[in-house]
Length: 409
Image (cartoon, rainbow, N blue to C red; front, side, top):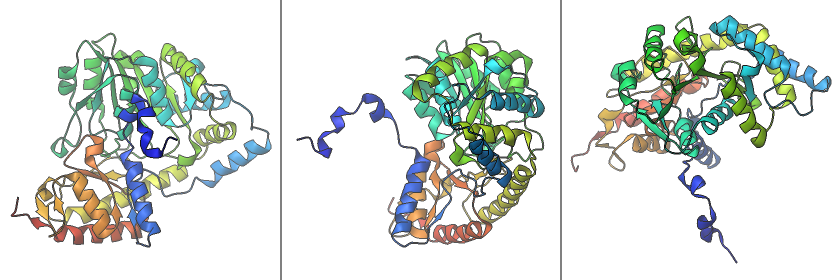
């Protein structure tokens, strides 16, 4: 009889190499402490605390009543793809045809489709860091190698075009990044994107994967898509979805606009994994893109207020470096000054130790920056109530105050 401890050798090398999502892991640890009776404030998941706007839920109900309960075309329902085309033109000045749009079960599947369709063993993907935790795992799953280009708080967590140019080799196939960025909230400005576009345009076989899922949570006043620059228009895959801007995380609805040959490959890949996304979600998504954007704009305003509150509170904690993110709903403090400190019981050697210390000492769940390619930092999601955020600042400050230099090191 095979016992649980004997089964590891039966797992594929592929699944053994795959890391557990750090955000999901921390969320799980927070739930376990909460189940034990502790008052845990979880700031680990990138999920808006707002409910999906009522007019979108009503659209889904109408779709169900109208019989939208059957299988859908693999690339998505025509109604949704038409709405996405209109949205791309209206909001991003991007022109796509119906055969260039692929709807998936979340933007995460969109990214997986791209990687599995375009990458081979030995290929390299330049990833601008800090990066979303899933990028590198999807790249490795496809057999390719992530090439991490790091940036720190002094650079506003943005990688320069010069650094991108220096990292390109004859194995480079993709450049992958998000703006607004998860985990930093940084936004690449027009001139920064244009500089990167000018680098990639000179390389025939390198393509850009631009993750723009936080587009509507942008405090700069105008979102810029790198695909609008003519020299990379046909070399860019623009990824987006409904989870962040419309508070539709559980609806699992993402999409891409891509060169037709890439869209065709993603349709082929998705057709063997999941087929089309569910019908009534797609109908609701189509309605959302064409409907009143006031609820989305109101959410952005609320996030901006929370951002400013968090910046003020965290900046007052000695040793914590905080910048001013221009989008998304994250703060990404540099905590390197705490390395080598202790409260007498726990020694803080790195960001992993710091985050575990906060969870155990103050019952605030955050995510280590090492998961995002930034060993000196940690991520706070301020997609939580103002009361929870205020309380979390108090708890974090109190925990940090207990840390002093460890003279035994």
